[in-house]
Image (tube, rainbow, N blue to C red; front, side, top):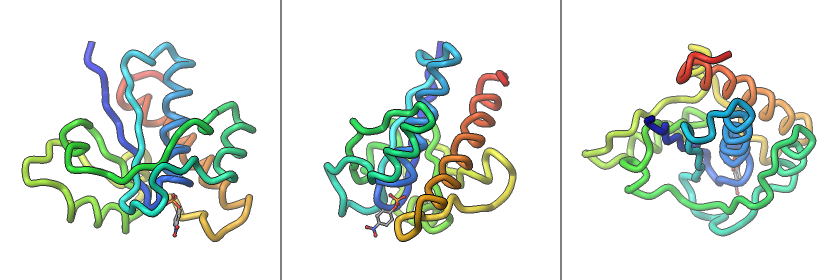
Length: 157
Ligand code: 4NP
């Protein structure tokens, strides 16, 4: 059966998008959908290339049973636009950047994450300069969004 290849994209690939990747992979595995979903993440910027996720994202993930400590940041590359079926921008600035850099022959569907999962043109806000509450809010948005994403893609609940 077809595998859905899904890429989460934020600015640095250390706070939001690695959490999205980890949450979706963990949720898919729990539902027996691991062979149907491939999750990855990247940043529009490359400043954190090769780094582990932000400690605060690792911690909020771990508290919720999602281990992202082994992930490493990378910058989005042209091949991602053909290697993935869906690319989800965490915020509207990421979305604008993605649209700008997408190769002309890109065949990935590019969406604002919250728009795709809830119909609301809302950002998953950048928590980098925030505190623990901001990281928890990001976790909750991504977690309920990934539930909806799996339900939409596979008609599961
Ligand atoms: P992310 O958060 O885009 O969710 O990974 C950020 C990480 C680093 C920076 C900004 C946002 N930074 O300015 O270094």
